[in-house]
Length: 534
Image 1 (cartoon, helix red, strand yellow):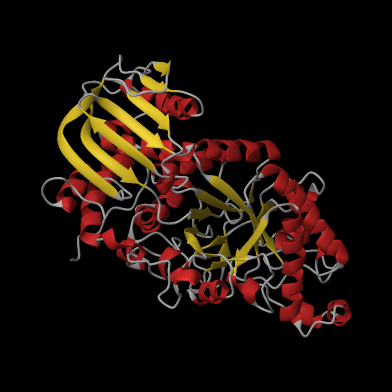
Image 2 (cartoon, helix red, strand yellow):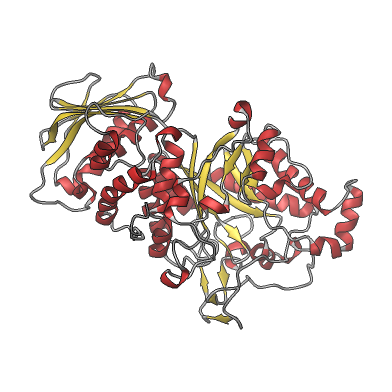
């Protein structure tokens, strides 16, 4: 439980405004003041994290702190120590001690040192987040002793450049703000009916054709009829060099980028590029300009399987992540039912129906990824027809899919629409920018509990964590992406990092009001808070 040495715990944590809330915190009188003479002290692998701190703090302070190679605490310094004996903190935990004499950050792994830095940044005046020198600020840290580590190993956000392309620069900025909140996983939804966003050198038409659509729907798909379009081509993609840069930038901030390559459904952009991948190869399709579920689906031939595995080879070369996401959701099977060749395929494989065919399809990818030392993850529809042996389930249609998978011994990331779909409205639709639908206010996100009561202790170990989704149909640019993400992502960050028993919405609101001062300095286009309801 978090606590303070004096006074009310929530009063002290609210004054500091730390998000996510640390596991344990003690406050003490006094401050430590950082001056141009304050050295950063580190050695070995800790030097990289000290250099990150040097780079991060310099713009606003207007000076670079000197870096001294060494391995011991010293008065007047900020010391970075890797201590492998602190095993109880896990791979991402840290201890941060601030006294009037100096600062010491200890962690068993580099990630912990980095997350300790994020807490230290929050302890400094909000002006520390400026990107140019701020005059007249005394850079003080309050005296605290913090022990901190995450509750869950998967703390994620998903962004969707397939529907509206997100420039590389915007992704890098998004990663920066994620890291400040101690998220460690960014899922990139790279392919869909409305766009293919990653360069595959063996199949250049995927981006020559699949990365571009003729126009985009205006207004809400369901309510604004007849449909109207903007008449403007939209597109873009990440080159392989772009991807390497994004992955490296994220890794430096201890964020893993998980790619998602959709299959067997959500395949229109790929089929428009290579018609032989579809069930009607003589039909020429264009990249889809409208949202919603599409009928087009990959045909399950050996050639299609080989094509997609070729794609995954290049994806794996670019993304070192353990997990590779293959989608698996909303695969409409009408074309499979109507295709003589697909029906013959079902008989040839000795399968019962189209659901078993999808399971077979996913199993081909699971076996392939396993042979390459990776793990398959997909949306909960991959449970249909039987789950592939090594698959991990991302449960979005409520919690039931995750519960079923965990009971069968499969790992799960909870991502239900009820608590994690950040493309939903944050308030009354008439007062908000156009969104997909649904209502997900801040308090609902904060009340989310990723481990269902239905699971026993052993089954609960399979819940890796949770993830917020930012589907891009109605997120046309970076400013709207930030508006939909924050401050709801602040609430989710606390759900997946902080202890369950320490959560309190009123206390979170108080801390968030302080924290939003930091996001304002960072020019994050967050949604303002509603008046407190309780």
